[in-house]
Image (cartoon, rainbow, N blue to C red; front, side, top):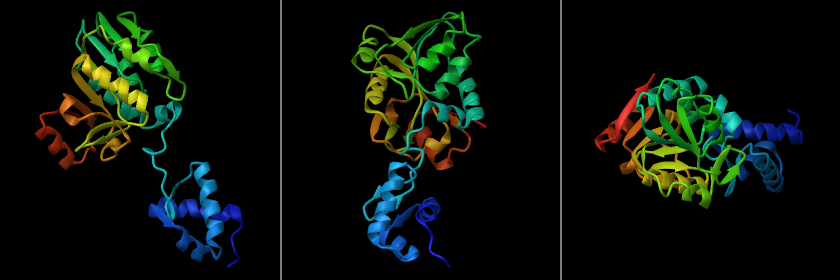
Length: 257
């Protein structure tokens, strides 16, 4: 068998990493018949391209939690499911309520399903969510303001947090980048986690909406513990043991197919 060239070797390293979950420099050097220095160089290049994650002595899969998806990528991921989740959350919103919708593509679907409600006031930190709400005459739209994070079309920072100071909302609807049944709700971005915590403080009920792929995944920034969550809306692929743990804590659990 002829030795692989650099591009072929790097493609095979990515394939092996995705298949095995984790690879070591020593094993790769032996497999391809090259030096460990060469393999480390390969891994550094692949890490820079975000095709894997460098780790001590090797590399690991760059999964969806570690590699934060852009808004465009998120919008196309599980889009039909997100629409059904949005429909379910919309049923939890009553006419005449004052609510907060977090930024994100799932909460954008919630916004799209509020067309039949009457006299709603909705504050959001999501520019995409606000654009969706602006199409509906029955909704009074408020923006938190703040600094715009273009990758996710979301506002954050002190101005966004201070905008909540003099209001009391009926409900807040939060999305999730990660959800752990022992720790709570996580997000990728520290400033967003801080804003989300402030949202929870000014709302009487906390509703979390996320698909089941986010479960058993932790991020670095904790938004809130499980005890702060009143209702969780997710899909029926949620493992039964997770469902039992959540219900045991008194969280209202709503599952969509």
